[in-house]
Length: 250
Image (cartoon, rainbow, N blue to C red):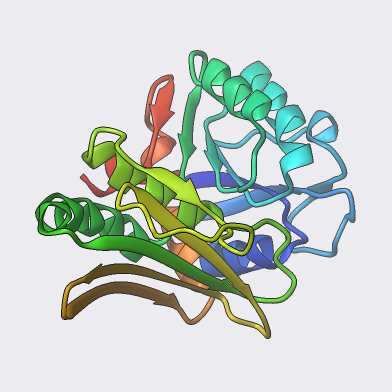
């Protein structure tokens, strides 16, 4: 049985992960870490340093500011980390990569299995449609409590396309300050915030007289928890290194 520690157990995603894992015979939540010290069916500690329970893997759904301390804890205790928190700074990403030299770390902008399939699909579409003069736009929609914009997933989709096209594109986030025609070598990335939208991502390939849209809609947060738990099961047995959901789904 995989023993899991949830970092950010008092947050919305932390609670969903705990509920999902409680109904999974292959894993068990043995501890949580959260400064709010929420009530739970497992021991909860305010900080990583305070945690006295050892686990096989940590699932992190916290805040960007909390991630460095978690990585230091994971490195010291040799516990793999599924890092699901988004909007990490370049400094924290460098720290994450450095930590992966000592312990297994999995980083993904989106834990959904469907989103990770979408990343492969947009790469294939871009390779075919760019030469046919299709423009590429990405629209992401999230609830009104989401702080960062554009979403990490929207950026990951753009980066996946750019990688497939040998870094030909630059990104445009706002056209209100310019009065000029669109450059074909740009990807427009747009953010919508409202209501309780869990997460919608549309990748639009617009050509002459035809439009192709690849869309992913998350209707509940459980899709991200399912991916995180799946990743935790995979990562618990892996050696040091930096992994992604592609490794989990391979």
